[in-house]
Length: 174
Image 1 (cartoon, rainbow, N blue to C red):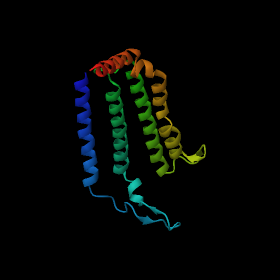
Image 2: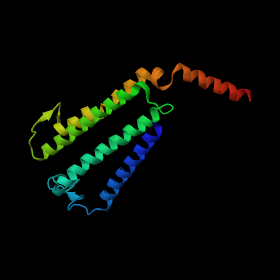
Image 3: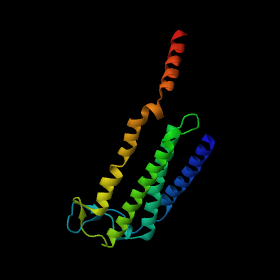
């Protein structure tokens, strides 16, 4: 199980690095950065070709999902004990699926906001910004609450504590 997980993570990292290399080596879109805003000269912004480019939109979607997948693998590997994830596996998977759905909604909201299909605001922010603040920023608290609530039974059990203390006693006696 652990070997398969590490191999999967390694293959994922190769794909992720390939995507990153493609982004670095490809020709940059015209007017990528550094244009002075017409109404606010102290503001610099990217050109209109970047956000409206279909390839830029899809690449940003895939790249963001790759970053979330990297977080998932890192937490999964760090939380596994002796090659097993235990009871927290279903919570991690469901949490990252929800996090991925929030990211997908954020991205599609951004795409729709470019064509002005979503007018107005939600709780004081444009819809895309609201998804970023209220969804992407706050959802990691789900993982924090799980960590706090189940630390004693998932992460560092009383049996682990006994083993730890016996290791300390053996080290001190030498």
